[in-house]
Amino acid sequence: MKKKQKNMKNKQRILIASDIHLCHIDWYGVPTEERMERFVRHVEEEYAKEPFEALLLLGDYSLDHWKWNIKGCWLTEGKSNTRTFAKTYVSRLKKLGVPIVMIAGNHEQYGEALWTELTGYHRRDHLVCGELLFIFPDTFGADLDPTEHSDGTYCGVDVDFVKKIMAEYPDKKVILCAHHFAPERESEEFRTLVKEEKRILCLFGGHVHRSNVVELGEAWGNKVLLYTGNYSYNTGKEADAEISFWGFRDLKIDSDEWSSCYITPENTAVIDGKEIHHPHGVQDEYFSK
Ligand SMILES: [Fe+2]
Image 1 (cartoon, protein in one colour):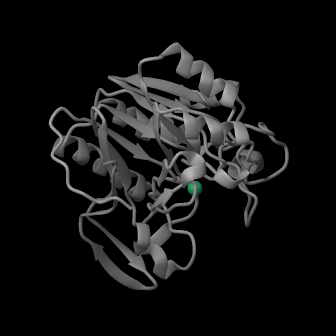
Image 2: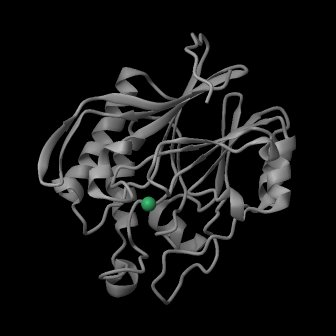
């Protein structure tokens, strides 16, 4: 991975978060509402420290649709934590005055009409931000409004959608953001687009709850997929919690140079029965040149 400090002057900054999961589970000894409060406060504090031009939310605000255990609360009790997240917490973040995008994750299998009613946003979207064009395909946009409990159906990128938006903004640099990109399950057409289209700088994805950066290799034009971590739990053992502790990614860009890091604000929690103090940190940084 390329790692080099850059002193970018006219940079734009964007903040990207995912997998926040307002639900019935209190991970790491912190009540879920308290965790939501911390998420909002930490985003606000990040803005105060170094303002960003847009906030991109890449899905999984809830466990409204969920295959396991007590199952998803939308089908069992008609309760939408996604709606609560939008109305209570995103509403507060709107006060920052920057554009916000809120796409759906695999635990939000609401069809577009219901998604818009519950959140005021779209399942898939795009956002122009200065020289940048963010495109948000809906890679879990199949089998929506289900009547059975599931964790969603991965359908991959609708390449026509991406190409259409790119054609509308022929001069913009493109960043692709989705709740999840599974490169091995993607179409040849999408891989070719990412490989050959120089305007596509990189991909951001959530879902895996980790913050690492994956080099996609020559077949993908040596582009990278940057994971956006979580503000809920790490997958795997509880002891893995600190691999990608609660946080979010930023993207900084100045003409042809860009960088991104995963930011973990100062936090406290209980992991494997032990109280931990997680200091403010930065990890999994990536520099484009
Ligand atoms: Fe998630």
